[in-house]
Image 1 (cartoon, rainbow, N blue to C red):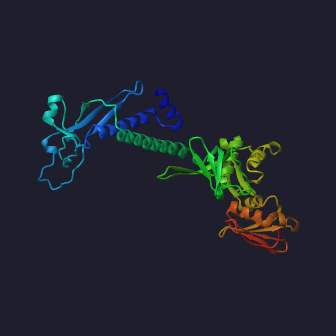
Image 2: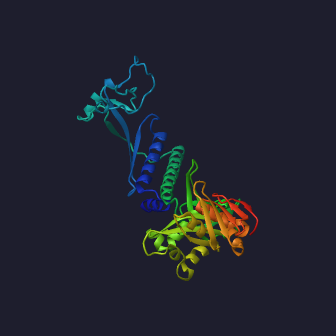
Image 3: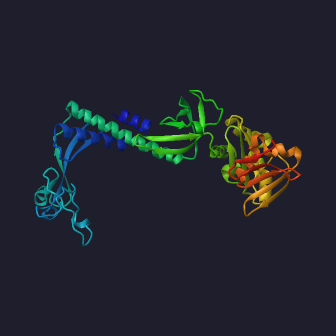
Length: 391
C-alpha cells in the first residue's frame, strides 16, 4: 500500500494526504451503503502503513435553544451543524436546526459521556469495523476514489501550468488531428492549434518540440493547454533564453512585429551604459541569433535599435533599406519616408512585407516616397499595406 500511494503521488502529482483523505471518504461512503443509515455522518480512518481501517459516527451536541420547534416560521430542514452560542454575532439569532438523532445528541446526554462538552461540539462514537463490503458498496467506493483522484489531478495540473503560462515548455509530438498538433508534456497533453503553428513547418511523431504556453483553460472535462510557435512572445522568450543581456535586464525588447515562418523585426534598447543592444542580440559572427533562427526553421530576423525619436526609429525599422529622410506628423502619427530609387524595393520588401512590419513595430503610418515625391507604398500602424506600386 505504501508503494502504491508513493506511485500515485509521483505520477499524478497529488499529495499523500489528499490520496488518504480520498480513500477515507470512499470507505465512509461504502460503509454507509452496506452497514449504516443514509442520514448518518460516518467518518473513516485509514492507516496506509498496515491497511487497517476504523469507522466512527459524528454527532453534534445541541440544547433546546438550538432546536427548531413547530412554531418556528422557517420550516426548512436547516444545517446539520448548528452555530455555536459563542460564535453567533451580537444581536443576531442563532441558526437553529431540526433535531435528527443521527446528526445530533442532546447536551445533557452528551455531558453524561463527556463532562466538559459544550453546545455545538462534535461528539465521536466508534462504529463496528467492517471490511466485507458488498459489490454495490465496493463499486461506490471505487467511483468515489476515481472521481476524487481525477479532481485532485486536475487541480494539480491547473496549479502547475498556470504558473508556467507565458513560458516556453518542451514536449514530445504525440499525434496530429484536424491540423492540430498534440504534444505530450508528461503529466498532460497540450495542443498547438493550426493557426498557432509556423507556416510550412512539419511535425513528426516522437520528435521533441518547444513552444510558448500561451493559454491555460479550465473546463468541466479537465484542463486545456494551448501552445504557440507563431506568437511574437515565443521569439521574445527564445531571445531571453539565449542572450544573457536580455535575461539580466541589461537589454530590453521594446516591441516585436512577426510574420511567423517568414520574417520578424525586433526592436531592442540598452538599459545599461556601454552595452550595444543590437550587437548583444546578434552575437559574435551571428552565433546567438543563428540559434534562434534555427529553432524557427530559418525565419529571417531583423534586430533594430529602439529610439524615442520617431525619425530615427522609423529609419531603423525600414532596415536594411537606406533612408534619405523621414518627415513625421506626430499629431496623426504619420511619417513620409524618402528613399533612393535603388532602395525602394528593399524599403517596401517582397509583397510589402518590410514596410508592413516597420509600420507594425513602430505604431506609425508610413508612406514610402521616391525622390520625385511619388508615393510608392503606404502601410498603416496595424501593419496593413494600403497601397504599393513597386517591390
